[in-house]
Image 1 (cartoon, helix red, strand yellow):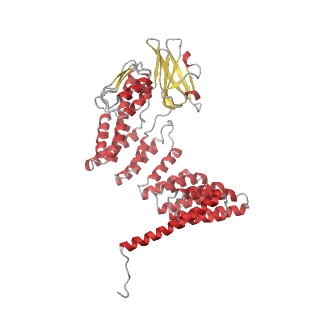
Image 2 (tube, one colour; image 1 turned 30 degrees about the horizontal axis):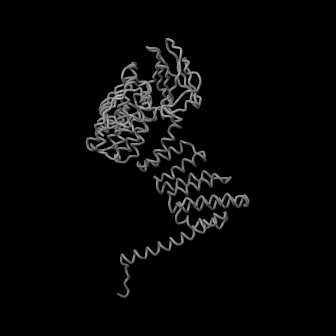
Image 3 (cartoon, one colour; image 1 turned 45 degrees about the horizontal axis):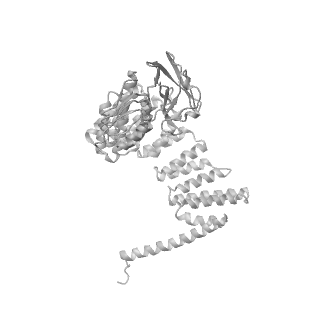
Amino acid sequence: MHGRLKVRTTEEEAARKKLEQDEKLKLYQAAMKEIRAKRDAKEFDRDLLDLTRKLLSSNPDIYTLWNIRRECFEELRKTLTEEELRDLHTGDLHFTEQCLQVNPKSYGAWHHRSWILETRPDPDWKREVDLCTRYLKLDERNFHCWDYRRYVAEKAGVQPESELEFCTQKIQTNFSNYSSWHYRSKLLPILFPHESDPQRAINEEKLQSELELVLTAAFTDPKDSSAWFYQRWLLGYSELPLDLAAFRYSGNLATVAFTKPVNLHKCQLTGSLDVLEGAGGWRSASGAAYDTTWTKLGESTVKNGTFELIFSDEQQQEHRMEVKASEGGEYVGVKLPKFEHIFGKAVLSQLKEQLESCSQLLEFEPDSKWTLLTAALLMRAIDRKAYHTRALEYMRKLQEVDSLRRGYYQDLGSKWAVEQVLEQWIEAGDFNAALDLSSLQITSLAYEQFMSIAKEVNLAGNQLGDRSLAKLVVLRNCQTLNLQQNPISRDSVEALREKLGGQIEILADFSNN
């Protein structure tokens, strides 16, 4: 056995590692005890900096220690000269670089570095941009570094064109770079804004070229999500912008709804009805300070014709909607929401080509979830009404092939189904007619603020649960609500009835409970 290297057994190796870990733990606990004692005694000196340095050098993720270092800096600032303070700052910048070599994704180290630069009188932001470039060569998907780069690039005054070129290089190196795609989505609206529609992120010409780029990336690796997410951003699916949604004055009750929650007490609403005079008296449907739907009781002189309802938001932006007189001394107004963007011929042609490419890919990979979802979104971008049924079929298939996200696909399909019916109801213009949303396989409600002026709402034969009923508190004008054949409880229905004042007729059965 002489001359042979002795190999430890598994038990011996485990015991040795445990002894090492126990020793490290003792040293760590002793150091932390000393640090806490100095902090409690408010001894924010260089010795405390040295103690925190020793621990952070091996584990830069102890956020408390970074906080203590900043406390030391604030205290030392009172006694150090400008040159000494500059040297201290420079030393900590070098120290954070050492920590980032231990863990390039340390939240504490990146944040401390930004704090040092904001604190010192002569920060070199250009050097920070170069530092990010070096780190992103080592790991082009380090999102901590990407976040820091956006911050320092703005501080350094780097031109957006230069940063966009950098993003392009990184994407071409590795399409699977979510952070780079995300940064790109921040730069393009600055460089290529849409000429006439502020709700559109970029102009048509740039949109076309970006669609070509994302198609190449998506089909290089259909299972990677980065490019697919970016394409969804390009197609422009987002929440409705703040605007008036609907208004009804009936039986001395004024109801006004908005596309987004507002605090009507901080805004102004004007029109030709007496009830609209004065900011007081308005109550939110949910009781929250910010809500989409508000009501107010008050008598008004009934006049024939129409008037313009004007809403001034907290930023003093005006939003207008036409309100018409109807039978029985009522006034009703609804603004048809914009559920889609209207694309030009060139972009539409590109979208159709991409849909065809998705269809071809699905022939080989019929269960590709990203392809299925993107195909459905492309259909809606091309012609939402014509492709409505097929897009919902894709949502149902996605619930099978990607069951972990079943709820997301159900809710997205529900949103599309509500859009279709709501648009037809608004375009018909008879707001005394029932809003029929029955048997649509709806699992959640969307755009409920537009339903606030309906007198009859039919939600029978869906899959709405108790949690969805909370949204129906906006139905202040509803006289009949059909909730039959939904998996809801009696208690939830009674709670809703009470919130709506008990005057509403609610049809429901509880056989599924």
